Length: 500
Image (cartoon, rainbow, N blue to C red; front, side, top):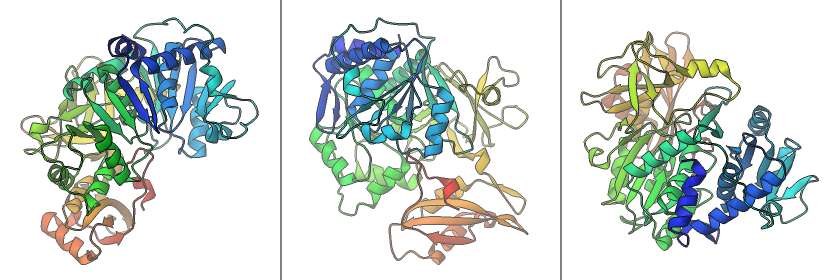
C-alpha cells in the first residue's frame, strides 16, 4: 500500500464522513479524495513526472492536505516547508530539491521567486505575482485523474530537519516508511473512524503531518488550527467538534497549565492526549493529568528521520513519568557508547534505531547519510544514529538525557541541561525553563537558567534554593534570568541556540 491508497480506502469505506475541518471548510473523505485526484491530473497535465519534487509551502489550510495526496497520486515527491521558515532556509530547500512545482498560498508566492517551472498559489485576494498560476486552475475538473504510479519502495517525501544542530538536511521517506509509521501510530492510539483529532501543529512538520495521515487511515476527522496562539479558541473548537484526540508539545502544555480560569475537564469528549517533539517534564504530566482527568496521556519520542521511535503506554505514565517508553512494535533500539558497544541499564549512551520506519538517507548528502545510517558492532544491517543520549531502567524503558551536542563540561564533569531543566520545571512558579552554558575560564562552562514564570513572586533565590536541594553542586545554575517568553522553532520546540 502506498500513502495515497489510505485515502482511496477511506473514501470507499466512509465517503460521507468528515475528513477535514478547517477555517469553516468541511471536506468529507470522498471530497478530499476527489479534489486530490483533480490536483494530480492538473499537475500531470503540466508536466509533472514520477519522482519530480513538489514543495508545499502552506499553513494549516485544507489546500495543504489536498496538495499532499494530489502530489503523491501524480507520482511526485512532496517537500513540506513551513511558511514561517527564514528566507535562507526556504532558499536552501528550493535549491536542494530543485522542485518541478511549488504549491503555496498567495501571500507567500512572492517569497518563491522563480524557483520552479510552476508556482501555484491558493487564496488569491489580489493580483498574483507574474508567472504564478492560481491553484484553482490545477483543481479544474477537466481531465482524468492521474493513474496509480509506482510502488511502496518509491520516494514519497523529502522533509527537512529543523537545522537545530547545523545545516538542514532532507530526510528521504518512502511510501513503505510512511505507511508503516502511520499504521503503527494509529494502532497504539487505538484510532477509529469515531475519532476527531484537533491539531494546531504545522502540517509541514512530522508530528503535525502524521495527524493527517493517521486520521485518513482510520477514516477519522482532523480539525486543523493554524496555531496554538489563542488556546481559549482552540478549546472552544475542541468542545464544539467533540474532539477525542489532542496532540501537544511541551510549550503548548505549559500554556494550558498557565490558564488560571481553566477548570478540570474542559473537553468532555477527549479520549487521549499525545506529546512528542520534546520530553514532557514530570510537572507537566502531573498538571495535564489533573486538568484532564480520565484522559489517556501518551508520552512519545520521535524525530524527522523516522517519524516516531518510542511511546509510553498511558498505564505506565504514573509509574515512570520521566520515560518515553519502548520501541514501536516491529522496530528495535540500542543504546551504545562512543566505541559502538551496548551500554548497561542505567548508563548513558547514544540511541540507535532500526526498523521499517527509518529514512532512506539525506537527499543529495552522502556524507551526512553515512554518518547517520551505519552499522553497529555485532549487529546486522544499518542503524539510525540519532545523536540523542538516553539511558534505560532495569525494565528497558527509555529515559531521555539530552542531545550529544547540548552536553556541557562544567568543572570537568559532563552535564546534561535537560536534567537541570527537569528539576526547574518542578519548582513552583516556573512555567518554562531552559538551561544554557556560558564560557568560563576556570570551570569551562557555568550554567545559566532562563525562566518564564507562572508566578510573579518567584525570584532568583527561590530558584537557586530549589535546585540546590535537588541537584549536585556542579549542576546548580550560577545565574537566573526571567523572560516573558522563550524563543521557539516553528514546530514549537524551545530554540536553545537563540536563548543565550
